[in-house]
Image (tube, rainbow, N blue to C red; front, top):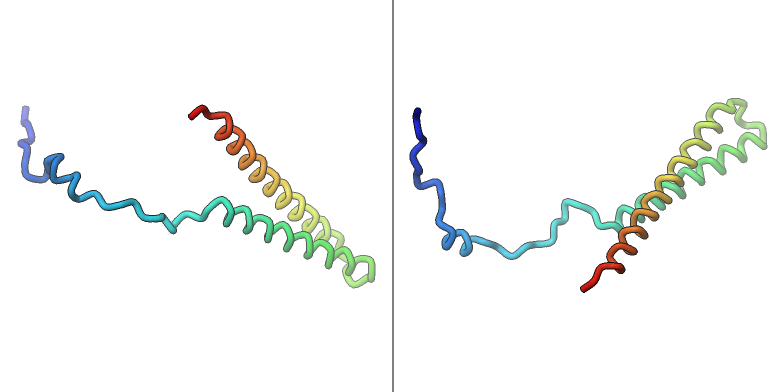
Length: 101
């Protein structure tokens, strides 16, 4: 049986503590407010698209009801996504408020 010898690639704990740098803000991940703002923007955009297509159907500019159905479905899904994100945020807030300090 071959045992791998310890080599110098293992650093002692006392030198590791000197190499610790202060934690910086991680800009790779958006904040909850950024995500929620983006979702609200998407909901507004899909609702505006639906309103435009509905007006075009009323005016007789669109004969294809399939595109209206697609717009309705997109608006419904985006609204459901926004509500789910809001509910998750509220649930997290409630859990944090119930924690004992």
